[in-house]
Image (cartoon, rainbow, N blue to C red; front, side, top):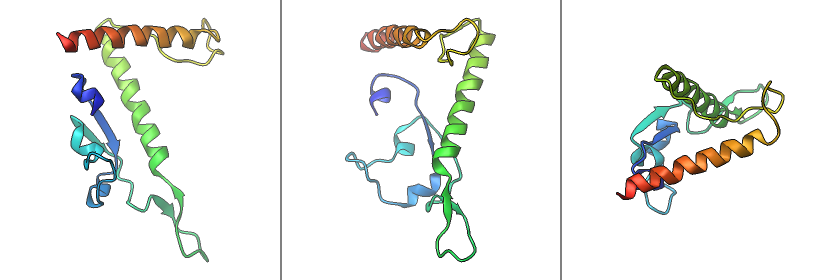
Length: 125
């Protein structure tokens, strides 16, 4: 809601199956209802997906794992689109990546902060 309020395009990565449940946020809305696009992870409401013989309940929650995979895929594909347009944005990498250092991520935070403030200024115009 904050992003939308500030003119940003928002993407929800969630299980649409959860839309059957009552909203728990203080606004009374669900993330899929406030974002521009919703990517359905397909994870069932109960989240756990592995039945184990002798256990009365499934185990192996899937929502976090699937949401992480989908989110990283969105980041990767977005980077590809931006690169195709000649745009390179500093990204977080392990200090073990050649050319990166422990302070590299601090530089990324600073660049993203600068970009965010610039975008906020445009949204207020």
